[in-house]
Image 1 (cartoon, rainbow, N blue to C red):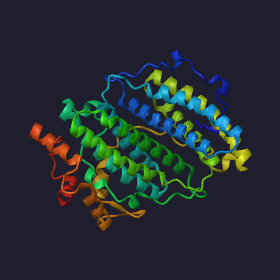
Image 2: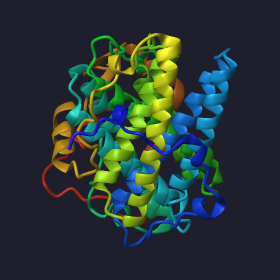
Image 3: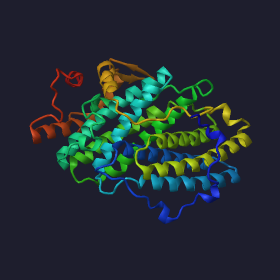
Length: 400
């Protein structure tokens, strides 16, 4: 059924404040719930955090008192939404278990976006990034078994494979090589704008999560691995945010953010399996419809344009969390040895890459390699035994 959020009316802003009882949402069951419900929660938390931070940045650059007031009002509702969404996660999960769930989000959400992205250059950016997230999941799985003596498969529930991707030590590149060419806001498919905002927000939240939770561990290898992968997440945020056209006005960016929230809440409402979580998605969608309407009014008044000029006339097909096992195996076979040079991709590392590796690693193996060595020494085996010939990751790792 066609759903155009520009034609829908949501809950009036003055009726959106919730009391503590309403915000005290019931967390999901960590043992028997759908792992993709947890993925939707993590993804939507990242979207809400991005909405809040963007609103703060816009307010800091806006000289119009009336606009700042409206941003503050809407932002408070976004903050309540973020609290409700993030508090759906169960408190019994360890930081590392939540980390593995974060990487499951990164893998399956980015893979889905790469498959659906209409622009070849943007699709390449997502394909490149997902092979690195895939390996982060594998390194954290080694750490999880090493210090908590459990398998990551118990968290991802077999929906996402836990195996090597592009080796994490090869993710450290010169900052100049993390910048991509932005899309052209005048000609790009509106779906591409939504994809870019979604993956940027998800990676940004992952970066924030690792930089804040990494030092809470006592085990040195855990602290070191979070520090290393946290730095790579900064690279990923740079990679994805540079895809967005910097020529978009503040008003255009505002309506894009609000439209994207409507898109994702509607998508998750359509695909959610947990009735209580589904009710949260429905409530928040009806709130976001009003936020979008208010943003559109601001755009008309201050940008002199109709929102229909930059937004899709109807919501695209729902964003779907689903297994991407064969797709990722095909990417490993075809694109594992890619790295970046400037805004493009190459198969032979430039001297800038070698210089960065030398400056960062020196003579010491990085934590992402040490955690695998420690796992091998503790258990006498690799995390995942390879039984069907030589995995292409091994060949690349041996060359490096």
